[in-house]
Amino acid sequence: MIRPLSCLLASTLLVAAPTPKNLSPAGTVERQIELFNAHDLEGFLALFADDVEVSEIPSTAAPTGKARLRELYAARFQANPDLHASAKAQMLSGSFVIQKEVIKGRAGKGDPLEALVIYQVKAGKIVKMWGLRE
Image (cartoon, helix red, strand yellow):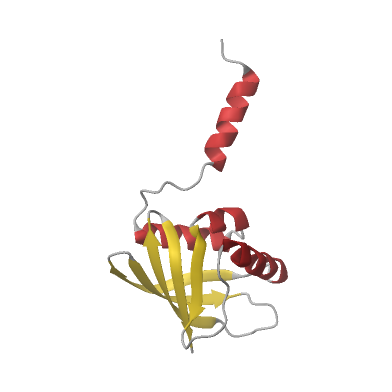
């Protein structure tokens, strides 16, 4: 006999299940943007490796590791309730996804931010991310 509580728990686990590791690099990056736009911090972070490396071109001090990324994006989502990203162009090369992205809804900023972002994806996780802004 199936107990109602067991069914409820099973359905909750299915909803909270992490994104499958069989996503392509482009699928992983696309899902990351969807979760960014939903301001789903935990879902967003689930797509990054624990030791993710993030940097900007030209090189600047940038967050390293998922714990630092959590602090950074938790603050960004809270301070910018209308924050939204979209990919305008994409190029793929093996484990690399290169996108031109537009970020809108930054508090106190009228103009959208345009950036070129390079992602390296391995086993369904973003392991490196480089950003180039104008």
